[in-house]
Length: 197
Length: 202
Image 1 (cartoon, rainbow over the protein chains, first blue to last red):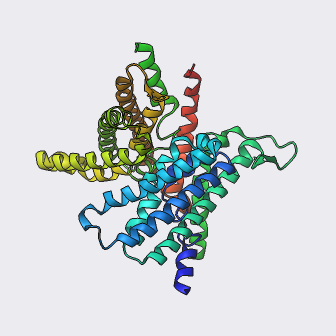
Image 2 (image 1 turned 90 degrees about the horizontal axis):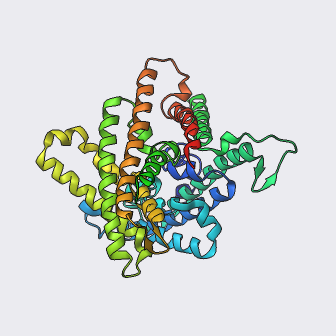
Image 3 (image 1 turned 180 degrees about the vertical axis):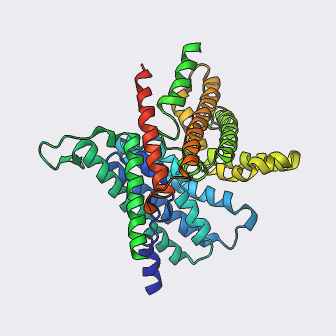
């Protein structure tokens, strides 16, 4: 039990997929214009991570070593398709906002990375919690980045204005602002790591 | 199908919506392999080749397999499978035919499978050139041309970035900002300058 908790919590801070492992940045940057988009993307990616990690762990003994990557990709793509169809059915607004980045969860390095590095060597329960933790870490990172960007770029969080008379800095809503925010955040986390060491 | 369409595709794919600097596709390889110009260029050519060929293949798969049988919801699975198989095939052929070429960019080929730019362009082509389940006239040429232009945009961004980072190696930068963070900040400034092109769109 203690082990499972450890697998779950490590993804949130110690091995945060975005800030520490620096994986899966394409969707992170592209959808982080607003917090709502960030949360939607986070949930979709978490679902895919959970499902694919569990299934990969379940069938890991049957997959021949040589063709394991294509097998993983098919499993991942199945879950991505499920997520995509659900999003189209229940939340068309979010689907339009995220656009091509939903099918692109297939090539998100976090998902394949977890399958290759963790799920293919561990039991189903552990892989499940590992996927959940990683997904949560990814979602939290997305919320942090999109929160900063939405606040600075449009003066709002989730559509609510926070400070009266705050003049938004438009560049933070642009692609360039996303790269700047992630660069500075990565630098900040490195600084913390160096301090500790 | 006319020249103007092609020109619009060229300018928007290379400058306005540059794959890396504005759409954020293929960012991982952009940050990881842009430390020196030579490997960056080899990677760019490999990516360009794969994007153009996969644009062609995925167009055929979509037009003649998924559309007629109403299987469009299998788009993601079938595209990634076709791309992965194709990349593996190219890698095998290159290794057999030209070991020299294989040494030059063979190691980057497996990476390209999970390069978001390849699948991204394939999906984008379908979104742009198949409206309501019907293909736009000349959609095949548009798709392939868009693939080529996205490849060119990728090469341009890679060249700019690797040139800057080569110079940075001699600079004394803060320890925390070394490598990744600084690369992102440079990318941000590059992207800012590419924003100037956005006035080009109609």
